[in-house]
Each structure stands twice: as structure tokens, then as C-alpha cells.
Length: 181
Image (cartoon, rainbow, N blue to C red):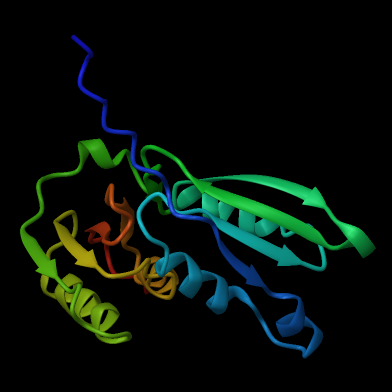
């Protein structure tokens, strides 16, 4: 008797390609295009980036989003970087954050996944204003809130967050700090 055929492991989709060289040649800033491409990736999908230089600062950003990288120089001094999603996304934390594992349970939960920017940031900042120092709020977002992070820091708040396993929802905890004078 022959064994039943095994279901093959699901194949990850082909890497999405993004060439930021034309953006940079025209004097533009490609970071937003890169983040939009990352936000548009399917679960398990990699991003192949082409740039006129080795994008070293981007490596840390992408590592925080759960991606490893392989960079190689190609013709003419340009670079090709393959960002590959890792099994579990690392948790990013604000520079001044105490150990998030020691934070109290959230007193407020927000699902902001259906809102367009800047509404999630506005709602998180407003919710933080209603809370007492040391209290925590939790929010779900449809993308990484890169413009929210400096606003939280300005207000003395700490944060910790990462993408869920499907890389479609960003989860953030905000610990309210004392107002800065």
C-alpha cells in the first residue's frame, strides 16, 4: 500500500521588488514608498530593494519590523537588498522604556485598524491624555505608526510594539508618562 501523498509546504510568494533609485535621482525621499511596499507585503513575502547605496539605516528599521536582510553590491555601485520576514517579529520599544513585561495591564483598548492616518495617532494621543501616569493603553493599527513614536516621546510616554504573526496588524502598548514641562 502506498502512503498518501503529503501536502507540500505552502510556498512563500515571490519577493516584491522596489527600485528607489529613480526616487532618489529626482531628489525625493524613498522611505514612505518603502514602508508602503512593506505594508503591502503578503504574509511570508520578502521585499527586494534596489538602491544607489547600501541603505544601512534601513536595516535597523526593517529588523524592528521582523525582517532579516542580505545586501549585495550590483553593477555600477548600486545595491540589491533582500529583506526576508523572520518567524517572530521582535518587539520594538521606545528608547526610554522600562521593561514592558513589568507594565500593568492596559486600562484602555483601541482597535484603529479601519482608520486612515492621521486618525489613529490623534486617537491614541487623546486617549493617553485621559489616562494617569503609569497607566497603559493598547491599540491595534493597520500599519506601523512611525510618526506617532516621536509624538509619544515628546509627551513623556513610553511604548512597545510589533506586528502580529500575519504582519497585517501593528500592536502597540503605550505607557503614559508624566507631562514634560
